[in-house]
Image (tube, rainbow, N blue to C red; front, side):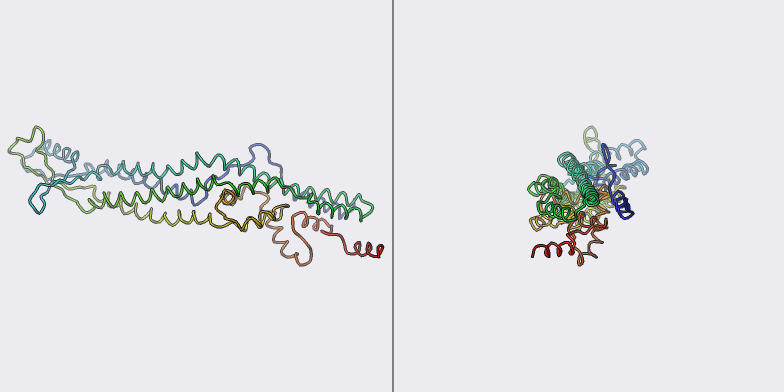
Length: 392
């Protein structure tokens, strides 16, 4: 074996990817980075506010303070605070002098509404995990495995070509067989390419993804309606008039009809309302951006894997409508790029290919590795001229 042949063998052996069998992948990401950020903020933020509301209630004492008459004992004052907090109704007279009542229940329901908000914002995530994540995980495992295997098959094919060239005594026979193999497309492995083409006609993943983000936008709109309709009505009301002459106390003449109470927890409701509007308003552009990414293909990822045989068909189909399962899979392949060992190798080969395309006809990784191994990617000119001279 010559030194050149040995060097080519070592180079091709180093280019082979390690075989990954069994539970080889460390952990697939079944959520895009921006989707994960939206999930953590949309679900975690109301839970954080809920914990702060409970902490403020336990640390600052009663959420209201009523101004009882001076002749009330401590127990009577405590009863007034408890009764007014339980009812939480503001009594007033309108312009016509008629008695009017206004409920202030958003103050009492604040922690529980935040918990309900977190549950509602988690429902789209739960939908994705139950309806799309299992199928997506299966697709990604198969595609990542096949992409790496297709790269390895190309390298092993070049190793085999190098061995045949070394053993062949007649170079004409070798080049004739090589050109026949390329003409008959023996170097192509169409299983993965056809599987991805089938995914272009499937829309289950993209429908679930669109539904998830649409539900997030719908839930955000519901938050605006809730805050605008209920919280805005009590946003600036710090004091209210409470009536305690109910039940057994309705006939007590020495009891005042209305007692003024002050809401010490008003600042908490104001902070929760303003911060919720701010955070969810900032999340809306992110959710819309996640939806717009489905309207275009990841051309860089496709161009890199065009170096593999039979991926030219995928490039031609790229001009079609991108709203399909294949585009969703490509987005998650980009998110799991660390699991694609072949991507870094093919990226380097693409860079080197751009510097040699004017000199050699290089289309796939087979052509490029053939050139690096010391073989011409096509029949040498001196052999072609010799055939022409023998057959005038």
